[in-house]
Image (tube, rainbow, N blue to C red; front, side, top):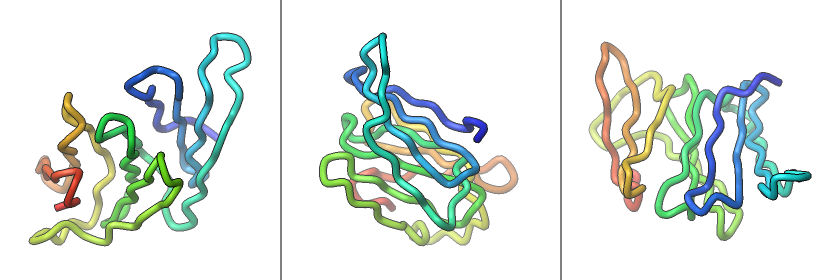
Length: 122
């Protein structure tokens, strides 16, 4: 599958890749084998972007959908965030984390950027 998203963990020891095959893959970066250590399949999300947030404890995963996923890298739990408070966006296709990892900006319709707090997801 073609890679749509690629992001290094802030500490550099993990790399994630994701794509339209609805799978996020995590690799241990050692410079030699770079073996896959885990993967997460999201049955209703062809992935367009994925970004590490909250110091690398979590990954925000988006696609051409009105919802997104938050993957907790510590527990391995995945949570579907069905909508952002006060928003009716039909697509949150791309996401970027702030430098400190506490906020995420999502692209929405007509050039709008929606900013959400990574703790509350709102």
